[in-house]
Amino acid sequence: MSKSKRKVWVLGNGQLGAMLSYAGQPLAIEVCPVDIMVPTDKILPLGVHDIITAEREQWPVSSLSLQLSSHPNFVNRSVFGRLADRCSQKSLFDELNIATAPWKLVDDNTDVSALYDKYGKRVLMKRRIGGYDGKGQYWLKQALDGQIPADWRNESIVEQAINFAEEVSLVGVRTRHGQCFFYPLTLNLHQDGILMASIAPLERLSALQSQAEAMLTTIMESLDYVGVMAMECFRVGNQLLVNELAPRVHNSGHWTQAGTHMDQFQLHLRAICELPIMHPQVNFQCVMVNLIGLEKDDRWLSLPNAELFWYNKEVRPGRKVGHLTLSIHDGHMLESSVNALKVWMPAHYQPTLAWILDEFA
Image (cartoon, rainbow, N blue to C red; front, side, top):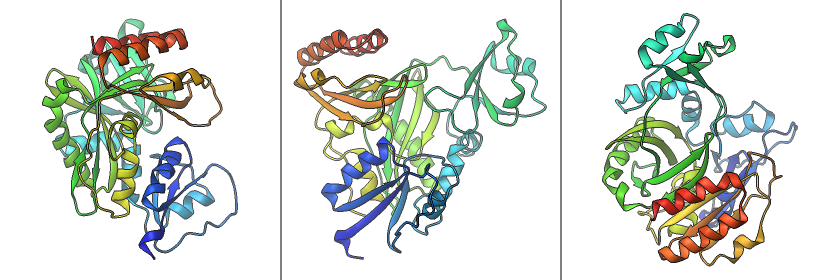
């Protein structure tokens, strides 16, 4: 195959697949996201040298998903299933001595009183499979006589509630030859389990960078992983506890599209296609605001430091439909832009926008 005609197929055709396709154009990589949810007898024209990646950790069995996942060049084939299950993901952390919240599998013999005795008066249950963006979670509360739902046994884990200071994430990449490169740590704000905003880089987080890189390096090496991976963490004092992994490009890395010379999508394509990679250079600090359940507002485009990425999806409550990235050239410009967004955005965005201003106060 001519190196000028690389072709990458993406298992899934959501916004991450679209952004991978966009990033492939300047690299002369044809990226083909595939809607695996539509029943069809179509035979994909997969070439022997084509490369397969995924924009999601799990997928339904279908004609198209089977064609893609069985291709010999499906990168990280064995990783997705292992990390999609929170039980096996947490077990990996324990095997590698990676700090995470104390946890256990909920099985037929799990006693709720014993959970309260071991983990405290509030215990978080998480479905083993699925349940991202705040879904698939259930709080057991001793004061309310909380009990384990019958259909959650053997299908969930429990975690000790962590009194964390803030949430951060690290996005990194590993090449086929084992080289690892990382972006600066990103500070994240979640609301009802959904990422609302990210800020990166932040000088005050730099002391945690080497700790985070060592953890993610250990994880990627143990999995022989190739491409971009994201690691979400809780900061407890000067220590990080890993919350979850995403074996793909990640929402908290969207700021790299505006703030670096090589964004996470291009970095992932370079890694899986064995193109040269160097350390991504940060051009300027950024704030990324997720656009959730909002109609597109052209006034956003009038902000002097804003870049809009609209996903062209049907707008529904709670659905991510785009993101807005504000480059931080100076504090006055950022304050002016955020104050404008406070006028233009609905009430549930006000805490997020206030959080951004507080971080730079």
